[in-house]
Image (tube, rainbow, N blue to C red; front, side, top):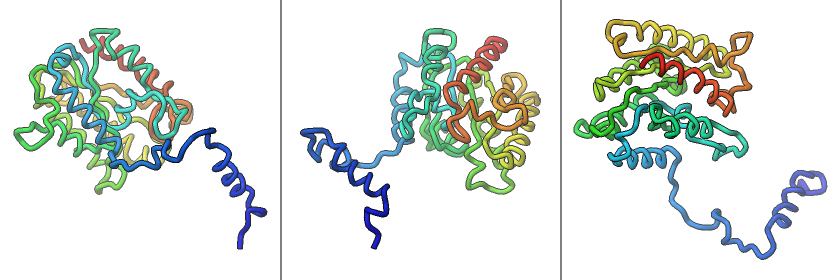
Length: 269
């Protein structure tokens, strides 16, 4: 039998369990002891967005709608709720898109974990069975700011690059159908920490999206913003200094993104 005498880590854990309880604290002071229904992060985000798009008075001032998955969603996070100490884009968002600069006041409808098909469902009109997040006429933004597709490279359809590309195209068409007077800033997918994924999916999809933005179908209302070069190092691989992990930017990364996006918006106006 293993004993605490030859497992120092277990002894330390047992000591912590008895010594870290604050004087006077009771077991039911902890959330861990109280029944609570499980609500996933994406469900909370979806509920928040639904409330925001129902507030027609506030929507009239919105100039930008950020559209995407967690990489877009995490513009709104400061300290990471799952791994404290990892900072995302909230400070940068508040500086540039939170209303301090009225012409760039933004609504963010990114949701962590979304694939292109999930985003398509959210922006599908309610009359067609979707969530109708763009249904209200009060929301008439100048630009959609779009980045999506990387989640479709996990548990993927084959050929992967084709699936990712076609999913992004479907989102572009759906956005334009919902708000034909709104211009689109189509952003490249960011590099990951996996060179094989970048070479097989991210780079070829980005090349196809760049060409698509200049095609007759999209050129009149689409601006291409290639962020990929700003997020790689001298060797052409993901610059880890700009990410909290292999996928999501840190605060410095969101600052780089902002510094590329704001001039692109100004040029497109």
